[in-house]
Length: 620
Image (cartoon, rainbow, N blue to C red; front, side, top):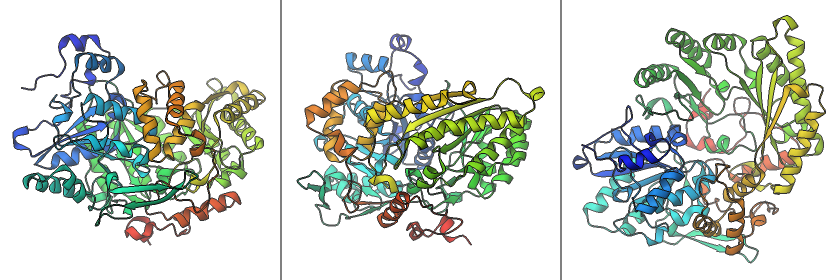
């Protein structure tokens, strides 16, 4: 019998106690006496966000298939429970066993978003694990990080023992076996970490030394121990059709952000948008076989009871067997009255037949991402979309019966001009006009709704725009104002609703995205001042972050608005994501010349990802 970590008295006091009680459908309970390794898998945000993350579902399923390992889940306690746990000295616990995380062998933290960094410190703090890696002893869990933010782990390097660089399905078995062997032979934590540092894809920060130039840029980044690699190459699954994927994903008791079955159809993207980090990190494109996907879809729907299935991909339209998969799902889902969600469909690849059939199941709004308002700027970012293609896609959508369209753009892109900004409003207006030109008055069910949203461009590591100068908070706000003003000047302004992102959050994200080890002390100071749940606007404290930067003597501008030399050593240059720095340089220089690059299926651009010997690089 598992004893709950929280009393009924506490559960009755807090919001959504189901976040903390575990025992959900398909959660895994093992006999801890018969397992050698306890692994706590953490998403450093509230339960509803973490439960929606596919990566954790995959690793949870994989680790629990190992007979010697019990993987459990842990999420950031919401502010109400956080307060109670501190007051009563209750250690953070894993959901399945309800036992303290500090008693586990591993604490794995997924790094999806820079604005969750203070939540990582909350997890460690509430778990009663020393926040700094150097202060942990042999009895403390090994803290390991993975996910997209691990491709620049330096701002949080002080808090982690290991970073797993790349896709988690490949090296965990070897890492766990190494840990068991180390323990069996009575070896120390330090000795295990040294052995782990020699496993492909593992970065152990304590075995590397950073030296800086007088101007604050990096002079060198080198290993301090023999046998530790100078460069760490990402891990990659070469065959997506023959790897781990959950047939029985954990099904929550309460509504979560992505309350549906998620079917990952492929990894990677052929398109090469120059702002997009994921498009570079997950190269080369690898597809799952359609028959394998059909099997997973039916099994997951049967085992969860979800009423919606979503296709997961960076660009679903580029999946070569999309038609066969969707027609299969339409037929099966119609019988069961299950909705099909088709995110990441490109506006230039819409199938009217598919749109209409999916609409028959259940109608929803459509989302398009032109990213930039003018053709010139779309060429700069290599979006590969013309206005003609965009408007034709909108026409197909309106003919298919849709009346609500979401449009996503970015402000602050490299080389942006006031004309590019005005183009956002003008393109929104043209799409609205297409509706009125396409749909006769007698067939209109009210006016068209165009929801235009702008986020602020943040340069990310391992993209051609990693050299770009980022806008200041004031520049971002001014550009949002110009966009809003331009929308009010459009003929169809009443059909357009304009939303924009918070500028101060974007600036901080920019620092954390391209930061180095000097930023770690700022994160720790901000946490000590009370910063937590920074990705939630109601809890974000820009003033406290500014105090932390000032007290630590760290310049925000150094990481955001400073112009970078083409040959500067970046904090992440010791990592190899498969795409070469020379390729990224070429793409950056082409962007400044407003030149486009063809996508992977049209012409190989020599990015370097073919070294992995799989995926699109080796298709005929």
